[in-house]
Image 1: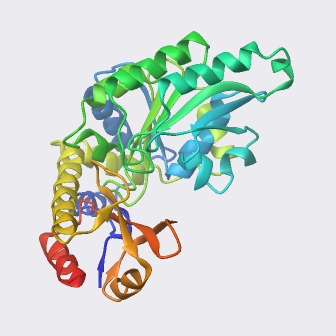
Image 2 (image 1 turned 180 degrees about the vertical axis):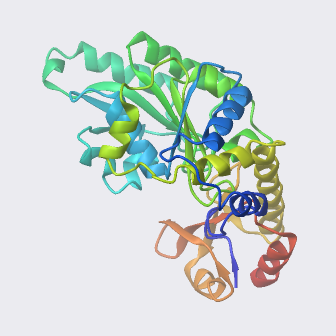
Length: 342
Protein backbone atom coordinates (compact mmCIF):
# COMPACT_ATOMS: atom_id res chain seq x y z
CA UNK A 1 0.00 0.00 0.00
CA UNK A 2 1.17 3.50 -0.83
CA UNK A 3 0.65 6.19 1.79
CA UNK A 4 -0.14 9.88 1.54
CA UNK A 5 -1.63 9.96 5.03
CA UNK A 6 0.60 12.73 6.33
CA UNK A 7 4.02 14.33 5.96
CA UNK A 8 5.54 12.65 9.02
CA UNK A 9 4.78 8.99 8.27
CA UNK A 10 8.38 8.21 7.22
CA UNK A 11 11.27 8.35 9.68
CA UNK A 12 13.91 10.96 8.92
CA UNK A 13 15.88 12.10 5.91
CA UNK A 14 18.95 9.88 5.30
CA UNK A 15 21.37 12.77 5.89
CA UNK A 16 19.87 13.29 9.34
CA UNK A 17 20.07 9.58 10.15
CA UNK A 18 23.69 9.60 8.97
CA UNK A 19 24.59 12.47 11.29
CA UNK A 20 22.79 10.89 14.23
CA UNK A 21 24.75 7.67 13.68
CA UNK A 22 28.07 9.49 13.23
CA UNK A 23 27.66 11.38 16.50
CA UNK A 24 26.00 8.60 18.47
CA UNK A 25 28.94 7.73 20.73
CA UNK A 26 29.95 11.31 21.50
CA UNK A 27 29.43 12.27 25.13
CA UNK A 28 27.67 15.61 25.13
CA UNK A 29 26.07 17.88 27.70
CA UNK A 30 22.29 17.77 27.95
CA UNK A 31 19.22 19.98 27.66
CA UNK A 32 20.31 21.76 24.48
CA UNK A 33 23.67 23.00 25.77
CA UNK A 34 25.77 20.83 23.42
CA UNK A 35 27.84 22.06 20.48
CA UNK A 36 25.40 20.78 17.85
CA UNK A 37 22.53 22.76 19.30
CA UNK A 38 24.84 25.76 19.35
CA UNK A 39 25.80 25.23 15.71
CA UNK A 40 22.16 24.78 14.68
CA UNK A 41 21.21 28.01 16.46
CA UNK A 42 23.88 29.95 14.58
CA UNK A 43 22.81 28.49 11.23
CA UNK A 44 19.16 29.33 11.88
CA UNK A 45 20.05 32.89 12.91
CA UNK A 46 22.04 33.26 9.69
CA UNK A 47 19.19 31.84 7.58
CA UNK A 48 16.78 34.30 9.23
CA UNK A 49 19.29 37.16 9.01
CA UNK A 50 18.46 37.81 12.64
CA UNK A 51 21.71 37.63 14.54
CA UNK A 52 20.15 38.43 17.91
CA UNK A 53 17.35 35.85 17.70
CA UNK A 54 16.94 33.41 20.56
CA UNK A 55 16.50 29.87 19.25
CA UNK A 56 15.23 27.00 21.38
CA UNK A 57 14.44 23.41 20.42
CA UNK A 58 11.28 21.60 21.51
CA UNK A 59 10.26 18.05 20.76
CA UNK A 60 6.99 18.65 18.87
CA UNK A 61 4.41 21.07 17.60
CA UNK A 62 1.84 20.63 20.38
CA UNK A 63 4.53 21.23 22.98
CA UNK A 64 5.80 24.28 21.10
CA UNK A 65 2.33 25.79 20.76
CA UNK A 66 1.36 25.13 24.37
CA UNK A 67 4.62 26.35 25.89
CA UNK A 68 4.94 29.49 23.75
CA UNK A 69 1.36 30.55 24.40
CA UNK A 70 1.49 29.78 28.12
CA UNK A 71 4.78 31.59 28.72
CA UNK A 72 4.05 34.67 26.62
CA UNK A 73 0.51 35.38 27.83
CA UNK A 74 -0.67 36.69 31.18
CA UNK A 75 -3.34 34.74 33.03
CA UNK A 76 -6.02 37.24 31.98
CA UNK A 77 -5.24 36.88 28.28
CA UNK A 78 -6.28 34.55 25.48
CA UNK A 79 -4.92 33.74 22.05
CA UNK A 80 -6.81 34.66 18.88
CA UNK A 81 -6.92 31.89 16.29
CA UNK A 82 -8.90 30.98 13.20
CA UNK A 83 -11.85 28.72 13.88
CA UNK A 84 -10.07 26.05 11.84
CA UNK A 85 -6.66 26.76 13.41
CA UNK A 86 -4.65 23.91 14.82
CA UNK A 87 -4.81 25.19 18.41
CA UNK A 88 -8.57 25.58 18.02
CA UNK A 89 -9.37 22.17 16.58
CA UNK A 90 -6.61 19.56 16.69
CA UNK A 91 -4.65 20.32 19.87
CA UNK A 92 -6.85 18.30 22.25
CA UNK A 93 -7.47 21.34 24.46
CA UNK A 94 -3.75 21.73 25.24
CA UNK A 95 -3.95 25.53 25.22
CA UNK A 96 -6.95 25.70 27.54
CA UNK A 97 -5.31 23.08 29.76
CA UNK A 98 -2.42 25.47 30.41
CA UNK A 99 -4.87 28.19 31.46
CA UNK A 100 -5.37 30.42 28.42
CA UNK A 101 -8.50 30.58 26.31
CA UNK A 102 -8.52 30.23 22.51
CA UNK A 103 -10.52 33.12 21.03
CA UNK A 104 -11.85 31.88 17.71
CA UNK A 105 -12.36 34.09 14.66
CA UNK A 106 -14.10 33.32 11.37
CA UNK A 107 -11.67 32.23 8.66
CA UNK A 108 -11.34 32.50 4.92
CA UNK A 109 -9.77 29.39 3.41
CA UNK A 110 -8.13 28.75 6.77
CA UNK A 111 -6.81 32.30 7.17
CA UNK A 112 -7.59 35.14 9.56
CA UNK A 113 -8.18 38.23 7.47
CA UNK A 114 -6.75 41.54 8.75
CA UNK A 115 -10.06 43.44 8.62
CA UNK A 116 -11.81 40.73 10.64
CA UNK A 117 -9.04 40.79 13.24
CA UNK A 118 -9.08 44.60 13.46
CA UNK A 119 -12.85 44.62 13.90
CA UNK A 120 -12.75 41.98 16.62
CA UNK A 121 -10.13 43.76 18.72
CA UNK A 122 -11.74 47.18 18.24
CA UNK A 123 -15.10 45.77 19.34
CA UNK A 124 -13.47 44.18 22.38
CA UNK A 125 -12.04 47.47 23.66
CA UNK A 126 -15.23 49.35 22.79
CA UNK A 127 -17.18 47.04 25.11
CA UNK A 128 -17.71 48.80 28.43
CA UNK A 129 -17.41 45.46 30.22
CA UNK A 130 -14.14 44.33 28.64
CA UNK A 131 -12.37 44.33 32.02
CA UNK A 132 -14.56 41.33 32.84
CA UNK A 133 -13.59 39.50 29.66
CA UNK A 134 -10.60 37.50 28.40
CA UNK A 135 -8.16 39.98 26.86
CA UNK A 136 -6.75 39.27 23.38
CA UNK A 137 -3.02 39.04 24.09
CA UNK A 138 -1.73 37.10 21.11
CA UNK A 139 -2.61 36.25 17.53
CA UNK A 140 -1.84 32.69 16.42
CA UNK A 141 -1.41 31.95 12.71
CA UNK A 142 -0.26 28.80 10.98
CA UNK A 143 1.64 29.10 7.72
CA UNK A 144 0.67 27.07 5.78
CA UNK A 145 -2.79 26.91 7.35
CA UNK A 146 -4.71 23.75 8.15
CA UNK A 147 -5.99 23.90 4.57
CA UNK A 148 -2.57 24.33 3.03
CA UNK A 149 -3.19 27.98 2.16
CA UNK A 150 -0.68 30.78 2.56
CA UNK A 151 -0.64 34.29 3.96
CA UNK A 152 0.81 36.91 1.65
CA UNK A 153 3.50 39.22 2.94
CA UNK A 154 1.04 42.10 2.77
CA UNK A 155 -1.52 40.20 4.86
CA UNK A 156 1.08 39.21 7.45
CA UNK A 157 2.37 42.77 7.73
CA UNK A 158 -1.18 44.08 8.14
CA UNK A 159 -1.84 41.58 10.94
CA UNK A 160 1.46 42.54 12.58
CA UNK A 161 0.46 46.22 12.49
CA UNK A 162 -2.81 45.41 14.27
CA UNK A 163 -0.94 43.38 16.87
CA UNK A 164 1.49 46.21 17.55
CA UNK A 165 -1.33 48.74 17.75
CA UNK A 166 -3.02 46.76 20.52
CA UNK A 167 0.05 45.35 22.26
CA UNK A 168 -0.52 41.75 21.12
CA UNK A 169 2.14 39.17 20.30
CA UNK A 170 2.19 37.76 16.75
CA UNK A 171 2.97 34.04 16.84
CA UNK A 172 3.36 31.97 13.68
CA UNK A 173 3.11 28.17 13.82
CA UNK A 174 5.58 26.91 11.22
CA UNK A 175 5.07 23.17 11.60
CA UNK A 176 5.01 22.99 7.77
CA UNK A 177 6.90 26.22 7.17
CA UNK A 178 9.29 24.69 4.63
CA UNK A 179 6.40 23.79 2.35
CA UNK A 180 5.00 27.29 2.62
CA UNK A 181 8.29 28.98 1.80
CA UNK A 182 9.01 26.78 -1.23
CA UNK A 183 5.49 26.93 -2.66
CA UNK A 184 5.26 28.38 -6.17
CA UNK A 185 2.79 30.95 -4.79
CA UNK A 186 4.87 32.11 -1.83
CA UNK A 187 5.95 35.75 -1.79
CA UNK A 188 7.72 35.46 1.58
CA UNK A 189 11.14 34.30 2.68
CA UNK A 190 12.31 33.03 6.05
CA UNK A 191 13.83 36.47 6.60
CA UNK A 192 10.42 38.08 6.08
CA UNK A 193 8.86 35.76 8.65
CA UNK A 194 11.60 36.60 11.16
CA UNK A 195 11.27 40.33 10.54
CA UNK A 196 7.48 40.47 10.80
CA UNK A 197 6.66 37.98 13.58
CA UNK A 198 7.44 38.24 17.28
CA UNK A 199 7.91 34.49 17.62
CA UNK A 200 7.62 31.57 15.23
CA UNK A 201 8.89 28.07 14.89
CA UNK A 202 10.52 26.11 12.11
CA UNK A 203 8.94 22.68 11.90
CA UNK A 204 11.20 19.67 11.74
CA UNK A 205 8.79 16.82 12.53
CA UNK A 206 6.84 17.32 9.30
CA UNK A 207 9.85 18.43 7.24
CA UNK A 208 12.41 15.66 7.35
CA UNK A 209 13.32 15.26 11.02
CA UNK A 210 12.47 12.40 13.34
CA UNK A 211 11.06 15.00 15.70
CA UNK A 212 11.62 18.55 16.83
CA UNK A 213 10.73 22.19 16.24
CA UNK A 214 13.05 25.20 16.37
CA UNK A 215 11.38 28.09 18.22
CA UNK A 216 12.69 31.52 17.19
CA UNK A 217 12.15 34.62 19.34
CA UNK A 218 12.97 37.56 17.09
CA UNK A 219 12.52 40.68 19.22
CA UNK A 220 14.66 40.00 22.30
CA UNK A 221 11.43 38.73 23.84
CA UNK A 222 12.14 35.19 24.99
CA UNK A 223 10.27 34.72 28.28
CA UNK A 224 12.40 34.80 31.39
CA UNK A 225 13.50 31.34 32.59
CA UNK A 226 12.09 29.80 29.42
CA UNK A 227 13.92 26.47 29.83
CA UNK A 228 12.49 26.12 33.33
CA UNK A 229 9.01 26.72 31.96
CA UNK A 230 9.59 24.14 29.23
CA UNK A 231 10.71 21.58 31.80
CA UNK A 232 7.79 22.34 34.10
CA UNK A 233 5.47 21.41 31.25
CA UNK A 234 7.23 18.12 30.52
CA UNK A 235 8.57 19.31 27.17
CA UNK A 236 12.33 19.45 27.85
CA UNK A 237 14.42 16.70 26.23
CA UNK A 238 17.40 15.65 28.33
CA UNK A 239 19.25 14.45 25.23
CA UNK A 240 18.81 17.80 23.53
CA UNK A 241 21.58 16.81 21.12
CA UNK A 242 19.00 14.77 19.19
CA UNK A 243 17.25 17.99 18.21
CA UNK A 244 20.39 20.03 17.64
CA UNK A 245 22.01 17.46 15.37
CA UNK A 246 18.87 17.22 13.25
CA UNK A 247 18.48 20.97 12.79
CA UNK A 248 22.19 21.36 12.20
CA UNK A 249 21.82 18.90 9.32
CA UNK A 250 18.62 20.52 8.02
CA UNK A 251 20.32 23.93 7.85
CA UNK A 252 23.48 22.66 6.18
CA UNK A 253 23.66 23.16 2.39
CA UNK A 254 19.99 24.26 2.28
CA UNK A 255 18.72 20.73 2.98
CA UNK A 256 15.57 22.07 4.66
CA UNK A 257 14.56 24.03 1.57
CA UNK A 258 15.62 21.36 -0.92
CA UNK A 259 13.49 18.63 0.64
CA UNK A 260 10.58 21.04 1.12
CA UNK A 261 10.78 21.96 -2.55
CA UNK A 262 10.75 18.28 -3.50
CA UNK A 263 7.48 17.80 -1.59
CA UNK A 264 5.97 20.76 -3.43
CA UNK A 265 6.97 19.34 -6.81
CA UNK A 266 5.41 16.00 -5.87
CA UNK A 267 2.21 17.80 -4.76
CA UNK A 268 1.98 19.67 -8.05
CA UNK A 269 2.34 16.38 -9.92
CA UNK A 270 -0.34 14.85 -7.68
CA UNK A 271 -2.71 17.72 -8.50
CA UNK A 272 -2.21 17.03 -12.18
CA UNK A 273 -3.09 13.36 -11.64
CA UNK A 274 -6.31 14.13 -9.80
CA UNK A 275 -7.34 16.87 -12.21
CA UNK A 276 -6.59 14.67 -15.20
CA UNK A 277 -8.95 12.03 -13.89
CA UNK A 278 -11.74 14.50 -13.22
CA UNK A 279 -11.58 14.66 -9.43
CA UNK A 280 -12.74 17.83 -7.65
CA UNK A 281 -10.69 19.73 -5.09
CA UNK A 282 -12.37 21.05 -1.97
CA UNK A 283 -10.00 24.01 -1.80
CA UNK A 284 -7.12 25.23 -3.94
CA UNK A 285 -3.96 24.52 -1.94
CA UNK A 286 -0.54 25.67 -3.19
CA UNK A 287 1.39 23.51 -0.71
CA UNK A 288 1.94 19.82 0.05
CA UNK A 289 -1.55 19.14 1.43
CA UNK A 290 -4.23 18.47 -1.17
CA UNK A 291 -7.91 18.20 -0.28
CA UNK A 292 -9.95 16.06 -2.65
CA UNK A 293 -13.69 15.34 -2.74
CA UNK A 294 -14.49 11.63 -3.04
CA UNK A 295 -17.78 9.81 -3.29
CA UNK A 296 -18.08 7.64 -0.20
CA UNK A 297 -18.16 4.36 -2.13
CA UNK A 298 -15.20 5.54 -4.17
CA UNK A 299 -13.36 6.44 -0.97
CA UNK A 300 -13.89 2.96 0.51
CA UNK A 301 -12.55 1.31 -2.65
CA UNK A 302 -9.48 3.55 -2.74
CA UNK A 303 -8.67 2.75 0.91
CA UNK A 304 -7.69 -0.77 -0.16
CA UNK A 305 -4.61 0.50 -2.00
CA UNK A 306 -3.90 4.02 -0.76
CA UNK A 307 -3.65 5.54 2.73
CA UNK A 308 -4.96 9.08 3.16
CA UNK A 309 -6.59 11.18 5.91
CA UNK A 310 -10.23 11.91 6.58
CA UNK A 311 -10.85 15.64 6.68
CA UNK A 312 -14.55 16.39 6.82
CA UNK A 313 -17.94 15.15 5.65
CA UNK A 314 -19.10 17.26 2.72
CA UNK A 315 -22.62 15.82 2.44
CA UNK A 316 -24.34 12.45 2.77
CA UNK A 317 -22.58 11.03 -0.28
CA UNK A 318 -19.24 12.84 -0.38
CA UNK A 319 -16.22 13.19 1.93
CA UNK A 320 -13.27 15.55 1.85
CA UNK A 321 -10.00 13.67 2.29
CA UNK A 322 -6.40 14.87 2.49
CA UNK A 323 -3.41 13.60 0.54
CA UNK A 324 -0.03 14.89 1.75
CA UNK A 325 3.35 14.67 0.07
CA UNK A 326 6.69 14.96 1.87
CA UNK A 327 10.44 14.73 1.46
CA UNK A 328 10.06 10.95 1.10
CA UNK A 329 7.40 10.95 -1.66
CA UNK A 330 8.63 9.32 -4.86
CA UNK A 331 7.56 9.17 -8.50
CA UNK A 332 6.79 5.52 -7.86
CA UNK A 333 4.34 6.54 -5.13
CA UNK A 334 2.56 8.85 -7.57
CA UNK A 335 2.39 6.15 -10.24
CA UNK A 336 0.83 3.80 -7.68
CA UNK A 337 -1.74 6.47 -6.80
CA UNK A 338 -2.54 7.07 -10.45
CA UNK A 339 -3.07 3.35 -11.03
CA UNK A 340 -5.30 3.03 -7.95
CA UNK A 341 -7.50 5.93 -9.12
CA UNK A 342 -8.28 3.97 -12.28
